[in-house]
Length: 250
Image (cartoon, rainbow, N blue to C red):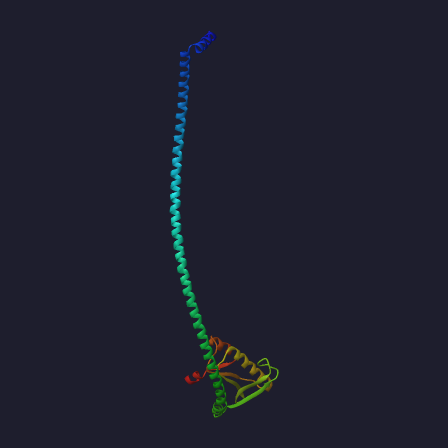
Protein backbone atom coordinates (compact mmCIF):
# COMPACT_ATOMS: atom_id res chain seq x y z
CA UNK A 1 0.00 0.00 0.00
CA UNK A 2 2.86 2.36 0.90
CA UNK A 3 4.61 1.52 -2.35
CA UNK A 4 1.50 2.30 -4.40
CA UNK A 5 1.06 5.62 -2.50
CA UNK A 6 4.63 6.58 -3.23
CA UNK A 7 4.25 5.73 -6.87
CA UNK A 8 1.06 7.75 -7.07
CA UNK A 9 2.80 10.78 -5.50
CA UNK A 10 5.71 10.49 -7.86
CA UNK A 11 3.36 10.28 -10.82
CA UNK A 12 1.52 13.40 -9.68
CA UNK A 13 4.77 15.27 -9.25
CA UNK A 14 5.83 14.28 -12.74
CA UNK A 15 2.53 14.84 -14.54
CA UNK A 16 0.69 17.47 -12.48
CA UNK A 17 2.55 20.76 -12.58
CA UNK A 18 0.18 22.45 -10.11
CA UNK A 19 0.67 19.72 -7.58
CA UNK A 20 4.38 19.80 -8.18
CA UNK A 21 4.55 23.59 -7.53
CA UNK A 22 2.43 23.24 -4.39
CA UNK A 23 4.78 20.62 -3.00
CA UNK A 24 7.83 22.73 -3.85
CA UNK A 25 6.24 25.75 -2.16
CA UNK A 26 5.37 23.72 0.89
CA UNK A 27 8.90 22.41 1.14
CA UNK A 28 10.34 25.95 0.70
CA UNK A 29 8.17 27.38 3.47
CA UNK A 30 9.32 24.63 5.80
CA UNK A 31 12.97 25.28 4.99
CA UNK A 32 12.40 28.99 5.34
CA UNK A 33 10.84 28.55 8.75
CA UNK A 34 13.76 26.37 9.80
CA UNK A 35 16.24 28.92 8.47
CA UNK A 36 14.37 31.75 10.19
CA UNK A 37 14.42 29.85 13.45
CA UNK A 38 18.14 29.25 13.10
CA UNK A 39 18.66 32.91 12.25
CA UNK A 40 16.64 34.03 15.23
CA UNK A 41 18.65 31.71 17.47
CA UNK A 42 21.86 33.06 16.01
CA UNK A 43 20.73 36.68 16.53
CA UNK A 44 19.75 35.85 20.06
CA UNK A 45 23.19 34.32 20.68
CA UNK A 46 24.86 37.38 19.13
CA UNK A 47 22.78 39.66 21.35
CA UNK A 48 23.75 37.69 24.42
CA UNK A 49 27.40 37.79 23.38
CA UNK A 50 27.11 41.49 22.66
CA UNK A 51 25.75 42.06 26.17
CA UNK A 52 28.71 40.17 27.60
CA UNK A 53 31.06 42.22 25.39
CA UNK A 54 29.40 45.42 26.57
CA UNK A 55 29.90 44.40 30.20
CA UNK A 56 33.54 43.61 29.45
CA UNK A 57 33.94 46.96 27.70
CA UNK A 58 32.42 48.73 30.70
CA UNK A 59 34.92 46.95 32.96
CA UNK A 60 37.76 47.80 30.59
CA UNK A 61 36.67 51.44 30.48
CA UNK A 62 36.45 51.50 34.26
CA UNK A 63 39.93 49.99 34.51
CA UNK A 64 41.26 52.50 31.97
CA UNK A 65 39.70 55.35 33.98
CA UNK A 66 41.33 54.04 37.16
CA UNK A 67 44.68 53.71 35.39
CA UNK A 68 44.33 57.23 34.06
CA UNK A 69 43.56 58.60 37.50
CA UNK A 70 46.55 56.69 38.93
CA UNK A 71 48.68 58.03 36.10
CA UNK A 72 47.59 61.59 36.90
CA UNK A 73 48.40 61.03 40.58
CA UNK A 74 51.78 59.57 39.64
CA UNK A 75 52.54 62.59 37.47
CA UNK A 76 51.63 64.86 40.36
CA UNK A 77 53.87 62.88 42.69
CA UNK A 78 56.72 62.98 40.16
CA UNK A 79 56.25 66.74 39.88
CA UNK A 80 56.30 67.07 43.66
CA UNK A 81 59.45 64.92 43.86
CA UNK A 82 61.15 67.07 41.23
CA UNK A 83 60.21 70.20 43.15
CA UNK A 84 61.61 68.64 46.32
CA UNK A 85 64.78 67.70 44.43
CA UNK A 86 65.17 71.27 43.24
CA UNK A 87 64.72 72.53 46.81
CA UNK A 88 67.17 69.93 48.09
CA UNK A 89 69.75 70.93 45.49
CA UNK A 90 69.29 74.57 46.46
CA UNK A 91 69.77 73.65 50.13
CA UNK A 92 72.86 71.60 49.26
CA UNK A 93 74.31 74.53 47.34
CA UNK A 94 73.57 76.79 50.31
CA UNK A 95 75.13 74.29 52.74
CA UNK A 96 78.16 74.00 50.47
CA UNK A 97 78.56 77.78 50.51
CA UNK A 98 78.22 77.79 54.29
CA UNK A 99 80.77 74.97 54.53
CA UNK A 100 83.23 76.88 52.35
CA UNK A 101 82.79 79.99 54.50
CA UNK A 102 83.18 77.90 57.66
CA UNK A 103 86.40 76.34 56.35
CA UNK A 104 87.69 79.79 55.45
CA UNK A 105 86.91 80.99 58.97
CA UNK A 106 88.57 77.87 60.46
CA UNK A 107 91.67 78.44 58.31
CA UNK A 108 91.72 82.10 59.32
CA UNK A 109 91.28 81.15 62.98
CA UNK A 110 94.03 78.52 62.70
CA UNK A 111 96.37 81.06 61.16
CA UNK A 112 95.50 83.48 63.95
CA UNK A 113 96.16 80.78 66.55
CA UNK A 114 99.52 80.00 64.96
CA UNK A 115 100.48 83.67 65.07
CA UNK A 116 99.31 83.90 68.69
CA UNK A 117 101.16 80.69 69.54
CA UNK A 118 104.37 82.03 68.01
CA UNK A 119 104.00 85.25 69.99
CA UNK A 120 103.30 83.29 73.18
CA UNK A 121 106.26 81.01 72.53
CA UNK A 122 108.46 84.02 72.01
CA UNK A 123 107.11 85.66 75.15
CA UNK A 124 107.45 82.38 77.05
CA UNK A 125 111.04 81.96 75.96
CA UNK A 126 111.85 85.47 77.10
CA UNK A 127 110.02 84.88 80.37
CA UNK A 128 111.84 81.60 80.90
CA UNK A 129 115.25 83.19 80.45
CA UNK A 130 114.29 86.07 82.68
CA UNK A 131 112.81 83.75 85.32
CA UNK A 132 115.88 81.53 85.51
CA UNK A 133 118.07 84.54 85.90
CA UNK A 134 115.70 86.01 88.47
CA UNK A 135 115.64 82.73 90.36
CA UNK A 136 119.42 82.49 90.58
CA UNK A 137 120.03 86.14 91.40
CA UNK A 138 116.87 87.30 93.11
CA UNK A 139 115.10 84.33 94.68
CA UNK A 140 118.43 82.67 95.40
CA UNK A 141 119.58 85.72 97.38
CA UNK A 142 116.24 85.82 99.18
CA UNK A 143 116.42 82.15 100.19
CA UNK A 144 119.97 82.51 101.43
CA UNK A 145 118.68 85.02 103.99
CA UNK A 146 116.67 82.16 105.52
CA UNK A 147 119.47 79.66 105.55
CA UNK A 148 118.98 78.13 102.11
CA UNK A 149 121.81 77.73 99.64
CA UNK A 150 121.10 77.80 95.90
CA UNK A 151 123.42 75.97 93.53
CA UNK A 152 123.47 75.65 89.76
CA UNK A 153 124.21 72.13 88.51
CA UNK A 154 125.42 71.92 84.90
CA UNK A 155 126.34 68.58 83.38
CA UNK A 156 127.00 67.25 79.89
CA UNK A 157 124.83 64.14 79.35
CA UNK A 158 127.05 62.32 76.88
CA UNK A 159 124.95 59.13 76.99
CA UNK A 160 121.75 60.97 76.12
CA UNK A 161 119.90 59.69 79.20
CA UNK A 162 117.65 62.75 79.54
CA UNK A 163 116.76 63.68 75.94
CA UNK A 164 117.77 60.55 74.07
CA UNK A 165 120.85 62.25 72.59
CA UNK A 166 123.96 63.93 74.09
CA UNK A 167 123.11 67.35 75.49
CA UNK A 168 123.82 69.85 78.25
CA UNK A 169 121.65 69.36 81.35
CA UNK A 170 121.14 71.83 84.21
CA UNK A 171 119.19 72.02 87.46
CA UNK A 172 118.71 74.54 90.27
CA UNK A 173 119.59 72.86 93.55
CA UNK A 174 118.37 74.16 96.92
CA UNK A 175 120.11 72.94 100.10
CA UNK A 176 119.34 73.50 103.79
CA UNK A 177 120.33 71.43 106.84
CA UNK A 178 121.45 68.54 104.63
CA UNK A 179 118.03 68.51 102.97
CA UNK A 180 118.23 68.81 99.22
CA UNK A 181 115.57 69.96 96.74
CA UNK A 182 115.77 70.57 92.99
CA UNK A 183 113.71 73.10 91.05
CA UNK A 184 113.10 74.07 87.47
CA UNK A 185 111.42 77.25 86.27
CA UNK A 186 109.49 76.92 83.00
CA UNK A 187 107.26 79.29 81.03
CA UNK A 188 104.88 76.35 80.58
CA UNK A 189 104.81 72.69 81.51
CA UNK A 190 103.46 69.63 79.67
CA UNK A 191 103.37 65.91 80.39
CA UNK A 192 106.55 65.44 78.40
CA UNK A 193 108.30 68.04 80.56
CA UNK A 194 107.49 65.97 83.66
CA UNK A 195 109.30 62.95 82.23
CA UNK A 196 112.31 65.06 81.19
CA UNK A 197 112.50 66.62 84.67
CA UNK A 198 112.28 63.21 86.34
CA UNK A 199 115.17 61.91 84.22
CA UNK A 200 117.20 65.03 85.04
CA UNK A 201 116.74 64.34 88.76
CA UNK A 202 117.63 60.67 88.31
CA UNK A 203 120.79 61.64 86.39
CA UNK A 204 121.70 64.17 89.09
CA UNK A 205 121.37 61.54 91.84
CA UNK A 206 123.39 59.04 89.81
CA UNK A 207 126.20 61.46 88.97
CA UNK A 208 126.48 63.22 92.35
CA UNK A 209 125.46 60.36 94.63
CA UNK A 210 123.19 62.78 96.50
CA UNK A 211 119.58 61.95 97.41
CA UNK A 212 116.95 64.49 96.34
CA UNK A 213 114.30 65.07 99.02
CA UNK A 214 111.91 67.29 97.03
CA UNK A 215 111.25 68.18 93.42
CA UNK A 216 109.62 71.42 92.23
CA UNK A 217 108.55 72.83 88.86
CA UNK A 218 107.64 76.51 88.94
CA UNK A 219 105.50 77.63 86.01
CA UNK A 220 102.98 80.26 84.96
CA UNK A 221 101.08 78.02 82.56
CA UNK A 222 100.09 74.34 82.39
CA UNK A 223 100.05 73.46 78.70
CA UNK A 224 97.62 70.57 78.90
CA UNK A 225 93.91 70.25 78.12
CA UNK A 226 93.48 68.47 81.46
CA UNK A 227 95.51 70.42 84.05
CA UNK A 228 94.19 68.31 86.95
CA UNK A 229 95.33 65.12 85.25
CA UNK A 230 98.78 66.64 84.69
CA UNK A 231 99.01 67.61 88.37
CA UNK A 232 97.98 64.07 89.35
CA UNK A 233 100.73 62.61 87.13
CA UNK A 234 103.23 65.04 88.65
CA UNK A 235 102.28 63.95 92.17
CA UNK A 236 102.67 60.29 91.19
CA UNK A 237 106.22 61.13 90.02
CA UNK A 238 106.99 62.94 93.28
CA UNK A 239 106.97 66.35 91.57
CA UNK A 240 105.21 69.38 93.01
CA UNK A 241 104.00 72.02 90.55
CA UNK A 242 104.08 75.57 91.91
CA UNK A 243 102.22 78.38 90.17
CA UNK A 244 103.18 81.97 91.07
CA UNK A 245 99.58 83.08 91.52
CA UNK A 246 99.14 80.46 94.22
CA UNK A 247 102.20 81.79 95.95
CA UNK A 248 100.68 85.28 95.83
CA UNK A 249 97.42 84.01 97.38
CA UNK A 250 99.38 82.48 100.22
